[in-house]
Every structure is written in C-alpha cells, then in structure tokens.
Length: 134
Image (tube, rainbow, N blue to C red; front, side, top):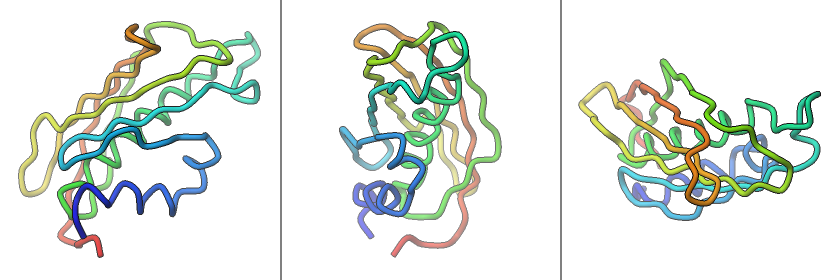
C-alpha cells in the first residue's frame, strides 16, 4: 500500500479518532497534518479542554506519520508538554514530521497549534514491525 494512503485507512478503522472529529489535512510519506475542533463535551471541570484532547490529536498525527513508511509501527514512549489552555471552539492542528527513522525505531516531534500559536509539544518513539500494510 502506498504510504500516503495508509493514514486514511487507519482513520477509517479508528472509531475513537473519528468520534474526536479528527480529519487529515495533509499527508505524505514521513509527514502528516491533522486537525479538529474542540467541542463542549471535551471540556474538563474548569471549562478548559481536557489535556487528553491535545494529546490524542498529537498521538493520532504521530501514529499516522509513523506508519507512512509501509510497516506497522506502534508507540513505545510518548510525552507531551501542555503550553496553553484550550477553549471550546478552538481549532487545533497537529503537524508531525519524522525526525529520525531506522529499521526498528522512529523518533517524532509533533507541534499542536491553535492558528499560529504553539499550544502543546508532543514527542514520541515508535517501534517499527516487519508487518506490511496491505
């Protein structure tokens, strides 16, 4: 399967990301950009977006990008820095580019932005299996 088509297949098989309203904005081998709008049912007890919202968006961009090389890739370590609070109605974009990849591991940095403002920074490591996407 062509690498730039894999994220579309992954999204079609992912009910959680679909429920989140995540959409693929751009995709090519080694890079994927996704976006979503923060809804009222995504807010925490303080009226701000739950931290899991930006985490999930970044994690989805991370997973999609890591799999564009045609092999199943699964995360083995992730972390996020929440920089700004998010509000209902904010449109978020997560842009992931593979920083380094070898036969077994991939290292990614994902920026989550609200317009031009950096609101979260996500880092992740994937293990690349030998199983091909079909």
